[in-house]
Image (cartoon, rainbow, N blue to C red; front, top):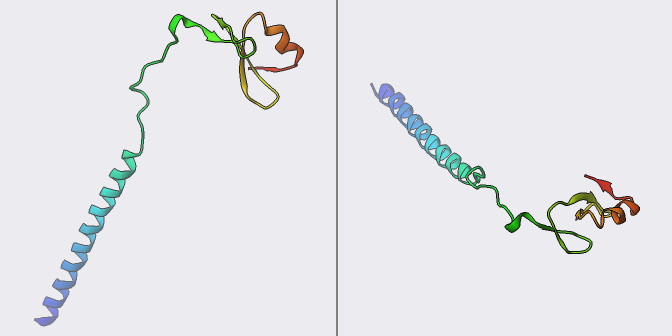
Length: 93
């Protein structure tokens, strides 16, 4: 009879440990999902007037051509400065 109570106590203890472990795992997963940022809710940000600044002459232009400069940085070039970018042999993006 005492052996039956001992086995029953071990089963109850193991069951309690499993329940506690599942609760901790669920809480951990909830924390991990809170770290994810949903980016789909934001709309596209538009510029006022649809103009961007040229990287060379700093004038606003409706249309820019984008190039990668010698350091790998992206530069936006207006139509006036486009020949200057091509003379520098910048790679077109």
